[in-house]
Amino acid sequence: MSQSDPASLAEAARILRRLADDLEESAVALGSTARGPVNAGPAGVPGAGLRQLRAVCEATAAGARGGGSALQKTAYALADHAHARSALADGARAAGLAVADAPHESTPRLTLTPGIAGIADAEQVAARARVLVEFTARRRALAESHGSREAALRDRLRELTATLEEVARTLR
Amino acid sequence: MPQSQRPSDLGVVLDRLADRCDAAVESLLLTVAVAGDRETQLALEGYLDQLMDTLRMLAATGRETRARLVVTALDQSVWPAGPVRLNRRQGSPGRSR
Image (cartoon, rainbow over all chains, first blue to last red; front, side, top):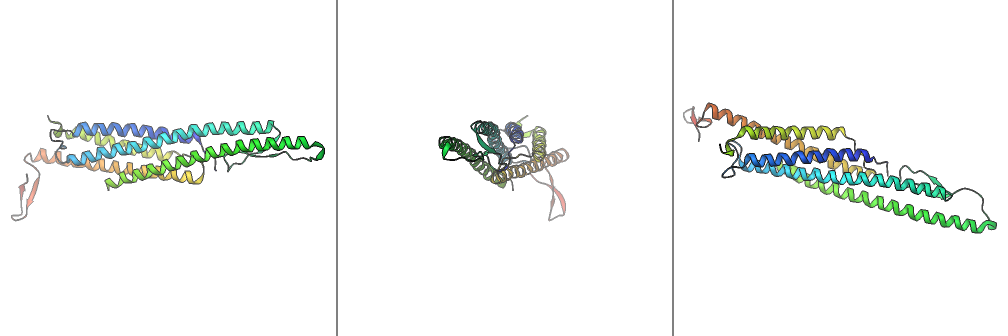
């Protein structure tokens, strides 16, 4: 994983929401302007053309709103993930583990602190191993939750992209 | 006046629509959204690219429709009976209904 930027996603989400509002307003305005006794458009512009334009506005607005919502949710989730990651690292350090930041992974790497341990302090060695196992499980759960969230975002964005492709095709 | 005869209102709506689409494309181009891993980033960029393409086409369609309104309005003010079309046989202008 490379570093994600929740603030940049929140900003993109804001633009998308604003765009969706604008397009929805335009769709309503097109509907009220084009509505006539026989649903015909103004002279020179067929009613069907205006209805299609209105439908495209609505569909594009839905595509923008869907993307905005997905990005906003992801921005919040990433902020939560950053807190959880930091709490995990702090907890692991406090428990005596070595914590290495891994910029390309969603969670820090945890290892036993270097040192010489022998049969004399077997209990202590076992206790440290248990701590490592516990924190590794927490790390794995955090990474899995992050991974499934990213997969859900990808699926949603691909779905919206396909829908917008269809919408654009009607304008060609 | 029936709404079907109010091209100026529609012109304002179409102008606004095209301007909004252009403004959104500009804003999206200036935004660098960073989603995380490469695959997610590609999905995000693909989505934003497609959205911007759709917006550009929507703006172009809005302007095209607007231009047709202007031409029609000019036709109606100059030739209230309808736009002039060339009569092919006689090579002279004739009215079309």
